Image 1 (cartoon, rainbow over the protein chains, first blue to last red):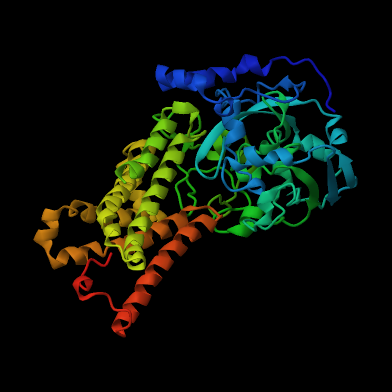
Image 2: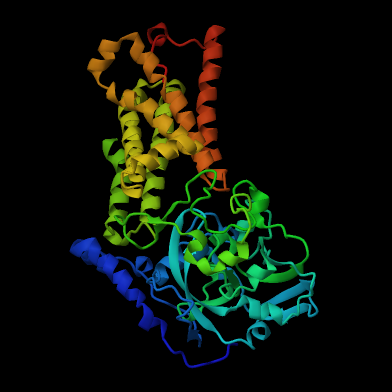
Length: 316
Length: 202
């Protein structure tokens, strides 16, 4: 399904996830180790699993921070389609059928219609990008995604001059996504970007994690990753992409407009109405690690030009 | 009973130290804080369930557990607050003050703690004797404190309010039982024996 290319850097060379797992176990002490050895395999930390991808590591656009372990990234997920507990997606996403998969392209573009996922990816070389991920709930991770630049993929559909925004839609199928049986959000989940945001080289469509095919709980088979925005902007299991002239409605904004804006840029000086966004808890840093200061645009200062002249307090 | 009430703590300790293969997941501080808060609320509701249980079963033994349940509730609540303030915020007083002042749900949770602290401090027999009637009046504070606890939980969740509503429903039911019994008593139906008429209402 994906183009095979020799990888410059294997994920294992960048960060062996076992190292993090073992460090934590070491900190747990000898007693914990002894008990852990007799513990059922069910509870054991798992390393990267799934089919390997061929990709090139993009060091230039990658964070130098050590990525979180495979275990952390695949067991702590906000993916309400599978339940509102962070452990729900890992437990329940297995039943999602991700093959075959196609994406419907619509709206203000010359090339519209249904595109099989293979065809969407074929012309592009897969890249690994280690991105910081800042959740609106004030926790963060660093994640080694594998994907393609969103802008390059979108250009192939030849958006017209009226395409001011790009709207994304997640699969809606309560049979496969049990969380959709309850209207926690107005399903299907939708998200959107201004076209210049979508064309920014940092925005990617991800299909992999740690060099493997993306696990279902992380948004397989195709998800958005916009590292300078809060995590909820990075929509998962995308089945539709529409080019629009008007700003599209987005799921969390529809649910609570005062709390979740369309832009949702990471910004330590604009608090969530119910909690501070000044600091964040880095997952995997250990119980006694202090919270870290949150950075404007999650540290991706190069996107600042997109918002020149805008009042980020109003357009939060 | 003491052992049963300490079990959640043992479970959380096992998870914290990775015993028996148990873990707290990727975000142990949040997991611990949430679990301690939930146990505090559960035990507050359990404490409030004892009087209706006594009425329903006619067995006054239920009330023997009231002090221990209440104290365990406060113990979990204090650990919950400590997790937030000492571990998560690393004793950042400015952040605590800002949170209590600006975040409605933290204001409510903190208010519940402030209401319950004197109850825990006056839980001894000596205090009970010294305060006399005022002891009872003071300990009625468990009602607003539990209400604030439910409200705090409701405002804390991002979107899925099913669980906080379940707790609030239990609280409402426990209060309803009291209202119905008070009304009945006033009308002189189903009156309780005279000996317990002036009993502790909580």
